[in-house]
Length: 336
Image 1 (tube, rainbow, N blue to C red):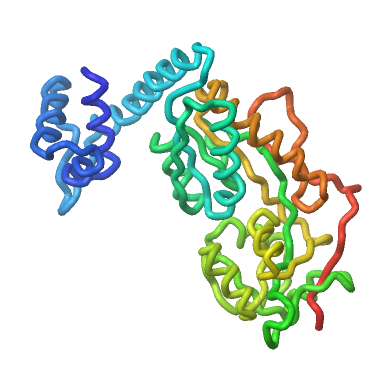
Image 2 (cartoon, rainbow, N blue to C red):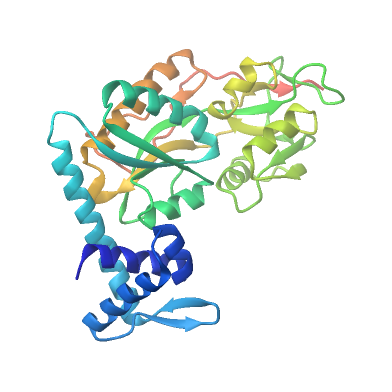
């Protein structure tokens, strides 16, 4: 049984299609089919059955898929460890990022890796957090940088930054909606009358906002999962939204938005580095952690970004560190 054949099988299983897997792998479909048939002959039982226009795994195929993921990951880890034993870190690192984190972390990692590890290549895959996490589980990524990753027994998540959340509004002079002002305190009841632009109810941030506001009745002006769309609608004066500082700092600097920190509404929005448990100690993963941790420690010095979680023995942990209750906060509200 060859690793290449196992890799072909995994891609066919993930795509549920020989043709789609062949396009992704850049091999001829007949050659791919022969490799899978060879694997079935070696095992002595079918791995796929056809169900309409797609393939389904047999019981044997499902068992092999789990084992194949493990074997391929171990082989990849072995190569990475051998490469990392040299003085210079090399190879390719595939990193998943969400729209809310890409502007913050991608340029930083490219710059610092180019300076510290010139032989290390970084590839980025961007998508919503759920998609990025699924890509990690499907072995499509080395690690991902997303907010509030779901607990998983095989995944280690290291919290990097507990972000402050902001009420975000249009800039001055946009139209009927006033920019966000810090002249008076904001409580939950004042949000009830604001036209809000938020993600759909299945989105993790929307669920956190709903829990934080308790029984407050929200006036939803529009729903969109797109970060770019949300900022554009708010900037044009169509509503307000709630976002972390990392998602709006460039627009605030350019005068495209107004914002002020929420002081009495706790929305635990934690940026974390997630990877497979057996890769948490890999040199390349630790290098990314070190770069990001050092950068975030500098960012929190101006009290806009949030807090850096206290390390727990230097080990990755999925627990979210609570904000310090004693920390001074600015309470804000939009101008009436």
